[in-house]
Length: 270
Image 1 (cartoon, rainbow, N blue to C red):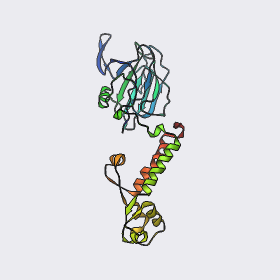
Image 2 (image 1 turned 60 degrees about the horizontal axis):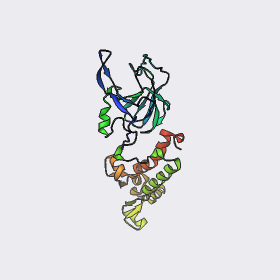
Image 3 (image 1 turned 90 degrees about the vertical axis):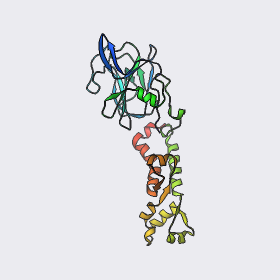
Image 4 (image 1 turned 180 degrees about the vertical axis):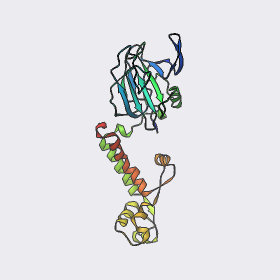
């Protein structure tokens, strides 16, 4: 489930599309949200990785760079897991390149760098190929009012996510998940049923049996790993079906902690 936040509190002063500046018709590639004549906090609209940070642009600067042609201010860009990107212009960053950020996390403050007439965030939304599209499409999609207070808007609630937990809490969740999988009752074949005294046995017992390498083909470790488990809720939604093999269920359960450490590292958890 995607978490989304309003990026900055204020009011819209210029929309995406063509506008007249100095008597010329020019294309405006973003949505300007003013912060009331003073610096305002800028927050990540979506979770992602900080791809680029510029902090050396002065007020009135008109020099651009190859990464963002035509853009003159300080800025932060955040690349999402799906490949899309948000560009926050006239923003002095408090994050660094390579840092992973959560939706709603503060990433900087609006400033007067570049070609601007006042404090505002110039928000651009980029596709995977780095072409821009109207940010209002995303605001409408997720039911966010531009300029509203930054907050999570998915399901109108703020839910605790894995990045809001400390490592001990994450470990406890993973251990419970793994145990739930290992303790799941599995329908077994005749040979296994005779050993366990019933038509079902917990998965951990079958794994133990497999480790002892019984001669019967249906008791081999490979057979144990292929037992089907019924799944529901978020797991079913993620994999697109109602059953999953035992080995994949264990991978999903144990992977939560390992993926968490690999992607975010213990330094991101307080």
